[in-house]
Image (tube, rainbow, N blue to C red; front, side, top):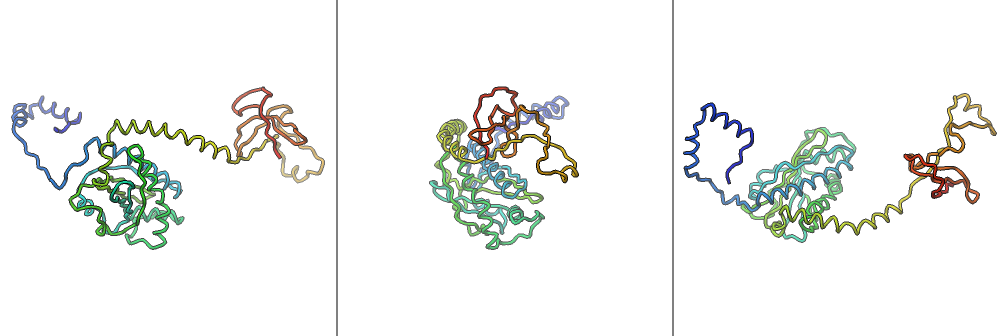
Length: 340
């Protein structure tokens, strides 16, 4: 396929033709001549541009989920974004990553074979620093993880497999499983050296530390899902998945309805000097700034939410709900919430 020129390149070419710097006849003659393009059989293209486009969208979703999870755990801003999606020989991928790094080995059930997620040590040590309550101060000296750091990393990245399954759900139901964490890429044997692998490169930034995260999936592993890596299938399956999520709504509602909330009522406020406060005696009356009969603020978890009217019910103080705090309503009808 011929290369597509950008608008800037088209403008530059037209300008050169107008000024005479480029001869149109020479361009025509060059276009008529035969061109030979070198093809490397070791870099077989197993994924089309449409496949790459869908895979990129899948892992952009994965990057957002992972960044949100880590930001919550670390109480810091974590930025992760997809930089590139490439298909390269496995041997080339192994040579491209550092000799001392952090590699998560996973199985993508029910697919055959394994996948790996390689994280630059600078990102890993920044993550561990924040987990232990420290401040990110890179660059870090690259070394192997201790047993404690290994356990902490497993806990912090425990949801990675769930995020990967969620990102791929529009294409297929995967159940990724984290098998181990390695440090030397030379001991990995995912596939043969010349086999094509899919490499998704993501950039990660935690504080002042930054590095790359590489997700490597062999072609033979992902091959059963390739027919589904089309824009039409991806969008259609997304609609089906959204409709299939509806049965979960009642379960979520039950959980929400069973949660508790603290409800309180503000009867009024008064402003006193410190001396007046010290002189208060039993039987003294403190005038409040709320007129009798005016609606009172009903707070839910200390947030003004409703308007109510104070009264009694069955020999207990009670509040009759008049409406939403944003509404101006004189409707005396409503539900009653009894406060102890």
